[in-house]
Amino acid sequence: MRRFPFVPGSHFIDAIEVTACLAFVVAGFVFYGACNGGDSLILFGVAVAFLGALLYRTGAWATIIPFALITLTLIAGGWYGASVAGCSP
Image (cartoon, rainbow, N blue to C red):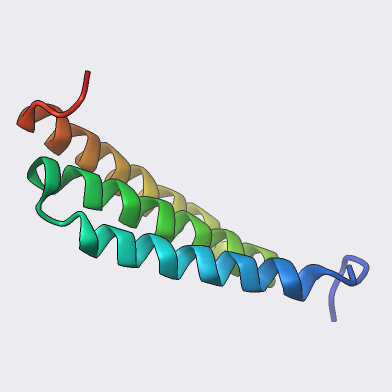
């Protein structure tokens, strides 16, 4: 049983989150060779963030901390890889 009231457009928002997650994964594979792989890691981190948000919205509240740590690790690693390759300002 859900603790919060049902929002009529919530399935539409879930569909947008799934589509965005898949789009960022595909974009990460497209930019795999750019900036020492840093750009793809950042895009994968954003995809994991969308997946974590989707799971949190559907009631899997215990997954928010692991997904936040994975997102932080991917984005920080991607930023480091891109800065070592000379792509960051």
